[in-house]
Length: 77
Image 1 (cartoon, rainbow, N blue to C red):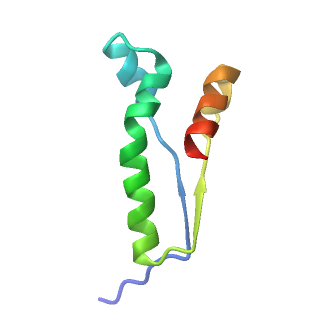
Image 2 (cartoon, rainbow, N blue to C red):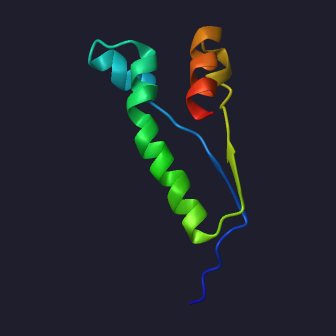
C-alpha cells in the first residue's frame, strides 16, 4: 500500500490545563510542559515532508481567559 504524505495538517492540543489542575499547578504550566512534545510533533511532520502546519483552537479554547490565550500564542512563537 502506497501512503502519501499530506501537504497540510492541523494540530490542536487538549487537556494540558486539566493535567496541570490535577497536579495543583497553574493552567499555563500544563501548556508549558506540553510544549516539547508539541515541538517534536512539528519537527516530525516537517521531516515527513508536510508543507503546511496549522495550529488550531477549538471552540472551547476560544472561551479561555485572554491571558491564557496570549500565553499559548507566545509559547508557539
